[in-house]
Structures are given as structure tokens and as C-alpha cells.
Length: 391
Image (cartoon, rainbow, N blue to C red; front, side):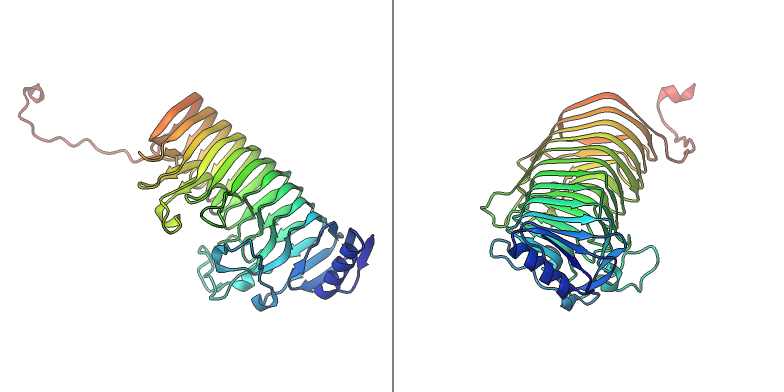
């Protein structure tokens, strides 16, 4: 079934989605034009298609959005349940086309700040652009996702996700406008896409909805993408997460002020009554071209954090220019294990190319980073009683 929407408002779009779903599935196509809207609910077997020249325009008023409310999803990151396009317990859903979804993100912040600073967060909740929970067989293709007020996409407990040829672009003075948060998902492919965000571009998480409820993020494949972030290009996990494993990133270009790849586990990210729980393993990063204003790779566990492990990480074929070195820093209770750096070259604009502590079984092969920043210091002689100084 195909329904073409010409009436330019969110109510008409939702009516079409409901009708297509009731008929067993099909396509809702938005004809060229601008469609102001609040929250929309995507349903099983429905493809939302944005024709060239289409702008699905999110309201600039946070009160026009519904809360994403699901009995199995009690977690509320960033203190907000507001969302623009939502789906729960759905299958065979898609957003396609070459149109644009625009969240008018800057309108949600206090922008009265210096040009180089993040906008100030408002007292009211900010909206996520896409929030899918417990969905299967998702396809996102071709669309531009512009200026989400909060996380652009939060995919939670989803499987069989195919994302290609999309653009996620957000003003880099906005904080918490992540690109795609892949949370406890399985079988996710992201390819041939462009990301430019103030916060992290791609994030792997395994957030436990309850302390005793397992969460696993696995089988994620990302390739042929360009990332530009003021924070991180790729973020892997937080200390109270569950299991992140068997994921690959390849053929990635990173440009930005932030870190290219980060897995940071600080005390202030811990859940209450938790000293750490995450298990991160079997991740591969291959064929990266990095120009970073911070760290190319930053893997760190603060003292006192006790994870189940960070192990089997491979970094291969890296061409790097960065301000700070590769940093691999575990602690006595959370050793990093089986880390390999293979064919890594470039320039670090710092005093050392590599900082390492608490790493078990580190393998270096063709590691060619150079560094040399620092001021030349004058020789200072001090009087000494040693007989050697008398010559």
C-alpha cells in the first residue's frame, strides 16, 4: 500500500502511518515541502519515505513532544523522555529517501554564550530525534538528520539494523546531540555515512535497565564513514554497562577537535552501589585516517574502577595526526589485556607518542608514530662536591 501525503502537518502523517499499518504495511511518502510536526509513531511494516525537497520539521517547543513511555524501559538518559519519531516492539520499519528531518536543536538551548563555548542547557527536557525500543529489522537510508536537540538516535534492544548513506549533522555548540547511540543492540550495520556533531558521533552502550537484567551489544559493523566531533568520534561503553563484544570499525576518516576513539571509565559515571561492571572484548579498528585535536585513541579506567575486563582490542592501519598520544591506561583492578597496535604511523604533537600503564600483553608491530613538541630548556649547573665535576 502507498499513501502520498500532501497535507503539510504531523497529524496527516500519523493518519497515513496508521492507515498503512492497518492495511498490513506499505509506504507513506511525503511529497516535497515542509511538514511541521510533534511526535510521530512509526509502526510495523511501514516505510516513511521523504521525497527530494521534503523537510520534516520538528517543533521548537518541547511541550509539543510526547514522552517515550514503555514499561520495560525505565532508563531516562539526560533526564528526558521526549522524542520526535518513536517506535516500540515493532518490526520491518524504515525511514528512507533523500529528504531531511530537522529538529531545530539550537532553539532548545540558551545560545547567549561566546562563539567557542557550548550552548547552555535549558531547564526543560530536550527531544531525541529517533527513539526505537525492542524493534527488529530496521532500515534507515539516504535521509539527512539535522540538528537534533538531544541524541539524534537512541536504538535500544534492537536487532537487524541497516543504516546507509545517511547524514547526521548537528551544530557543534550543542552538547548531548550524539549521532547514533547503539544500546544493547545486535546485528547492526552502518555504512557510507557522514556525521558531524558537538557530542559523540557513534556510541556503543549496554545500559542495564535493571541491575540484574543482562544487556549485550554485539555484532556491530561500521565501515566507510566520515566522523567529525567536538567530543568523540567513537565512544565505547561506560563503567556500569554490561557486555559489548564482537564489533568492527573500518575505513573511517575522523576530523575534529575531539578524540577519535574513546573508552573512558571514570568514577563519576558509575551507577549507585556499583564499582564497575562492563565487559568489553573483541573489537577491531582498521584503516583509520585521523586528524584529531585531542587523542587518537583514549582507553582509560580511573583508580577504583573494577570492570569485568577490557580485552582483545586491535588497532590496525592507522594514519594519525593528533595533539595527544595513544593512551592505554588500566588500573590494578582493571587491567587492559591483549591489545595490538599494527601499522600505526603519523605525528603526535606532544612529548610522547604512547602512554601505557596496567596493560597485559601489548603487541606493537610497525608502530611508527613520532613526537617532539616541547620547549628547549637551558642547561643549569649546580655546585657539586663530586670529584667528577672538577675536570
